[in-house]
Length: 148
Image 1 (tube, rainbow, N blue to C red):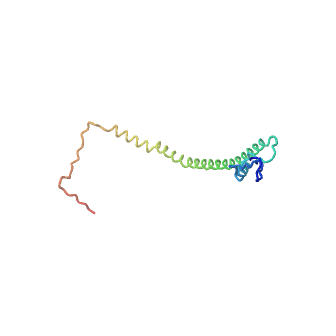
Image 2: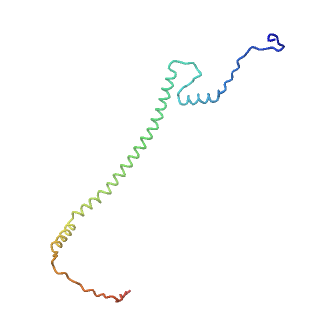
């Protein structure tokens, strides 16, 4: 009795609800892509060169931001180099006179006189000369008096 039924039958209808579709997520992704410059509007019609143009604009924007950042980095490097040069010049200014004084002391007459005196002592030394013996006045058991 498939032909006759007291209940009205409807034709088969297709009611598909996507399981994993999240409209909020899709809107978020589109906003992020627009911020990055990957795609400007995916909802509109395609015009030739739209994606290429969007990428070029995003690249230009990124390069402009990097150049602004790079200018501040260059300034910081210049200041650092300037301070380093000033410190180096100050160190050299303070160090060179002292080095000059050390070399001058090494070549002055007083050091030459000391050298000559040492040479005379070396020449005057006679290893075969008799030794002078100084008697030791201290004997064991003697007490040493400390006078204050």
